Length: 242
Image 1 (cartoon, one colour):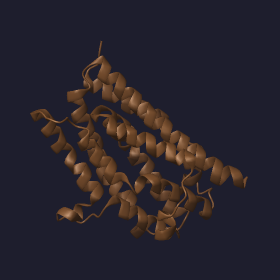
Image 2 (image 1 turned 90 degrees about the horizontal axis):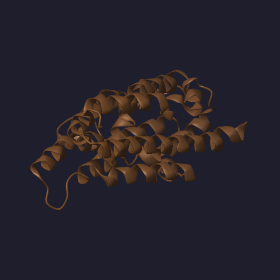
Image 3 (image 1 turned 120 degrees about the vertical axis):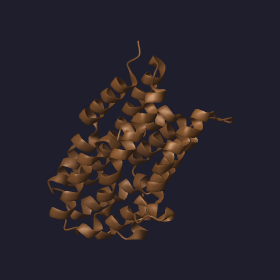
Image 4 (image 1 turned 60 degrees about the vertical axis):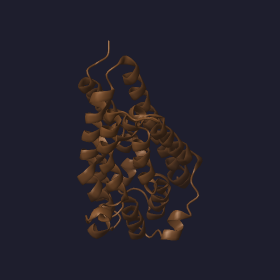
């Protein structure tokens, strides 16, 4: 028998916090502890650009995945509920706000670490990085259930802890000024809202055994893809230097 949507989402959030590589993988612990060299950290940041430079399309796909050729009233409501994700990723300065695109803030962060724009956009991505990106985009395109559970639930619900640690490490161990840490501070402000929005929509969709099984699988697929990516970076940039 299906769980209540509330119990289902709480279970997913708990599992994500217990298994997500951004919280538990050795690579990120090395960063938090300041144990990567600056060139090693630069390499990690460049690889992460494969995803962080393209988050606007991820947000847009969530809307595209809602409904079909002839949308229902409920589809329209869900599409509207997801619009803030696109605005936040694309830049609230496009609609009169102050915060620019999250991808632009990531470019600023990379620059503060000594990675030029040309270097960042010209990065040759590891095969494991490509595996992560392809899997996450596949989840975004599959359906709203897969998009939310493989995106918001799998990541944004726990970003506050990860983001704060990353920001502290950048400032304390790698000399990045607070002015260049907007990428992290902005994510601290919006990720809780993203997770709450996902939970509200899932309360309408994750009501059957079938949809809950799909959502659980999507979350685990996203976690696994990110672990594969982190394994690849650890082997390529840290293991090779040992």
